[in-house]
Image (cartoon, rainbow, N blue to C red; front, top):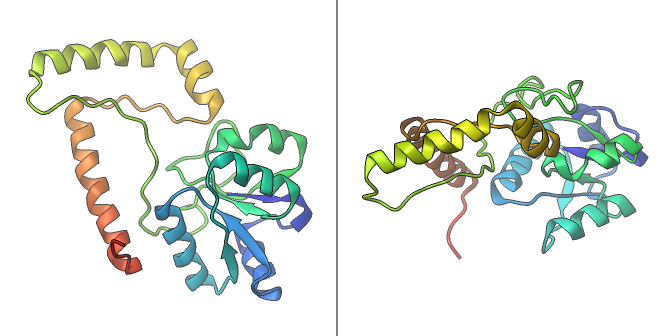
Length: 195
C-alpha cells in the first residue's frame, strides 16, 4: 500500500485516523476483489472512512494517484518503486509474508497486526490434466534451474518486485487448494454473490 506524500501520513494507523477526520473525502484504488474485500474489512475494523474508485487498468490508477486525485493505492510494488525513490509516494505496508528487499523498512501487513485472510496474486505454470508425471517433473526441473540462477532471480524477478517461488508440483498443488479455500472464506465473509 502506498499513499501520496501530500497526505503526510507515515503509517496505516495514521491513514485510518486521517480518513476518520475527513470522512468520505479520501479515495483509494485496488486492482482486485480480494484487495477490495480486505479494504472493506480494514475499514470496518478501524473505522476508516474511504471511498474505492474503480479503474479500467493499472496505468489509469497510477496516474490518478500521482495527480493526487486518488491518494491511496494497493498495487504491486514494481509499479511504485520509481515514485518511492522520487519521494512522491510513501509505502505503508507490504502484503507478503516477509519484507521486500526493495523496501526493507516497510513492514508487512502481519507485522502491523492485521492477519485477515488474503489471497495473493501469483504467476504459475500449469499443464493439462493427464500430463504424464515424467514430463511435468522434467519441465519443473528445467524451470526451477532457471529460477535458481542468482542473476536471473535478481534482474528478472526481485528487481521488478516479484517474490521468486519455485515450488515443486505437489507443493504448488497444495497451495492452489489452500488458496481456493481461502478465497471461498473471503467471498463468504464479504457476502459476495455472482452477478
